[in-house]
Image 1 (cartoon, rainbow, N blue to C red):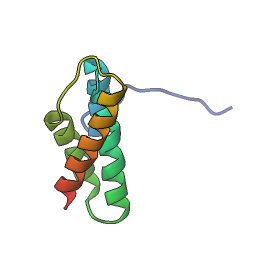
Image 2: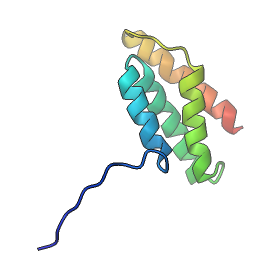
Image 3: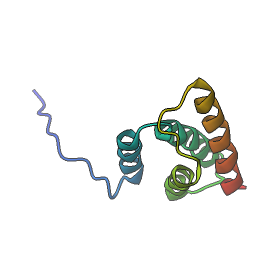
Length: 93
């Protein structure tokens, strides 16, 4: 049978993984920001509008620039998603 081995994740090489852990630790609307920015960045990458490494920059800048809400409600999530997508698109264009 094949053997499975597991190693600690390399958060330096895989910056998006580090950003995901950061968003989970901070909580609030950070995971929403990460998700919205990631969706915009991946779509732009697939259209050859940004490079592979630029996706992490877009996500990280979005997480730094979009207003943090510690205890968001539904309307906050909707507004966060819209604001993040707008900002990420601005960074691409």
